[in-house]
View 1 (cartoon, one colour):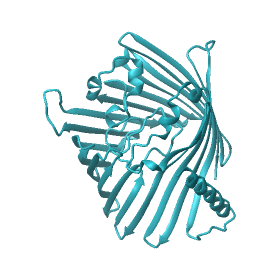
View 2 (tube, one colour; view 1 turned 30 degrees about the horizontal axis):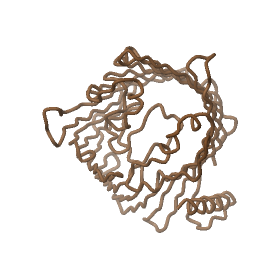
View 3 (tube, helix red, strand yellow; view 1 turned 90 degrees about the horizontal axis):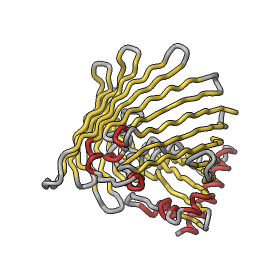
View 4 (cartoon, helix red, strand yellow; view 1 turned 135 degrees about the horizontal axis):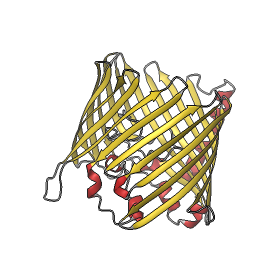
Length: 389
């Protein structure tokens, strides 16, 4: 299996080279992607021991128009991670290879050692068929029903963490999706997803435009455990953007220890004449009280799902970003988590475009929180270079 992945990578590199020379093997194939290097330094205090990691990250996106209405789309991540984190955490390589999708064999560690691991994964691999105003897609794909910027209660198929800033594409789902477009302002969708444990998430969405807002309604079953109903919106109040989402979870098997849950988020954003953009968002998560976390270590061990997208019953987000000049931009974001005894997260960042396809970024993260009298704090620095092709 692993040798076949190496062969595929080799074929992919040949295809990429051909694409750049305008001599693709298939004239209807398009290949693009990026190559990134990122250095990560983590420490508690600046004069304490630093944990340093390195990441070489390559992404390849394939698109092949087999026929007029039939397209194959695939995307793969190839990562070489080496440094202290792999060396100090014996479970690091195994966690990297864990794939919760039904086609879990799409993620593999090609090689691993005491302080390095080479991992490859297909987070996109699906067939898409379009006919008139109907689109059908089957395979591993991104199903994005989110409307908010930070927390997405409507994104029931493939949740993601806001803290994982280096994964812009977000994870995909192994699913079949049918989309019907009655007109250019509305869409009806039906999706069925299956995961590694053969749990089913099945839901429908209807999105339409009314009163100048894109409004959506969703309903279905998630993970074969809960019925879900939800709504989302995106629009403007005068010149200020306004969006949000709400999802209601009702357990299929009702017992004395189970009850319904509500997760909701709403946010605003505004851009001033001097190009300063201000964003604010709040989240309420009634499920937080049911997780039963005893300490900080348990908090980090909670599996990511749409119910665990926040670390607090209430969470508040604020961000200011500014384009200093056409090549340099910066931002400062903060999340306040009162359930963690006034815990907070703060992240400043700078991005500099050296060329149209080459970017340099410097980003910091600081976490501080307390749970059951256990205090945790950590600081991270990231230096990233990205070349796109």
